[in-house]
Amino acid sequence: SSELTQDPAVSVALGQTVRITCQGDTLGRYYASWYQQKPGRAPVLVIYGKMNRPSGIPDRFSGSSSGNTASLTITGAQAEDEADYYCNSRDSGGNHWVFGGGTKVTVL
Amino acid sequence: QLQLQESGPGLVKPSETLSLTCTMSGGSIRSNSHYWAWIRQPPGKGLEWIGNIYYSGSTSYNPSLTSRVTISVDTSKNQFSLRLSSLTAADTAIYYCARRLGEECHNNNCYDAFDIWGQGTMVIVSP
Image 1 (spheres, one colour):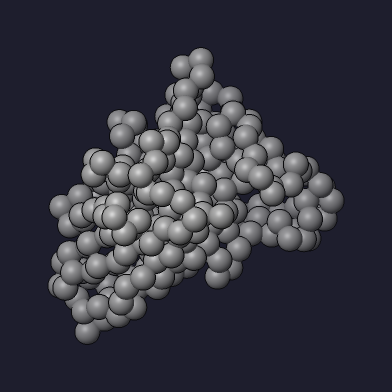
Image 2 (spheres, rainbow over the protein chains, first blue to last red):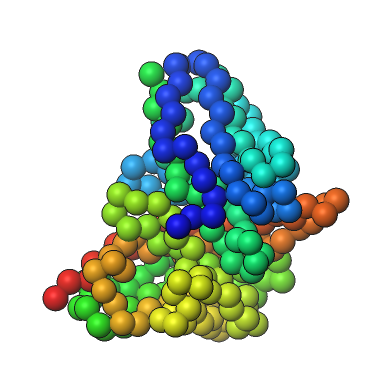
């Protein structure tokens, strides 16, 4: 079982804001990283660290963290943001990596 | 631009050993700042971290797989490889290789990330 917990699915109206959360005991020590995966494609890193965005990732994607919960926010969701989103961080021992179960985002 | 490409058989038999190779282009695997990883995804399911390797050969494996997995690196060929033994149908998955950023810490909070991924290779375990 995953040590990082995500809601299985969320939906958002086009142009609105959606927050995806990831809960885990280690998130107070390690920031989560977030990955977007579209069908048939490899995951793409969208957020890492406190709120780092790789080159090419739109600024409507942002990250935050509070206690044992990390969040990915899409402000002004676009149709192309419809995808699965996974969080990733360390396990309780700190020497291994785990992924959350993923959240399917549907843009209505 | 750095790219990763997985290669290996698409079909393997149960109880056999899977061997996959990841070839890096556009950079050097002998990086002080990066690690190299294998991650897999069973059909219709989520991502599972398999393990990491540093160019020196230092490794870290998923505890659930550690008895069956070996990751190695060949710096002369800019490649790293995965061997997974005693295969079962549960090992059927898309296997990705990825680059992991080295850990950075600020104010007692640390982070890293898998910033570059290969396109993935589908492996089916079937008689």
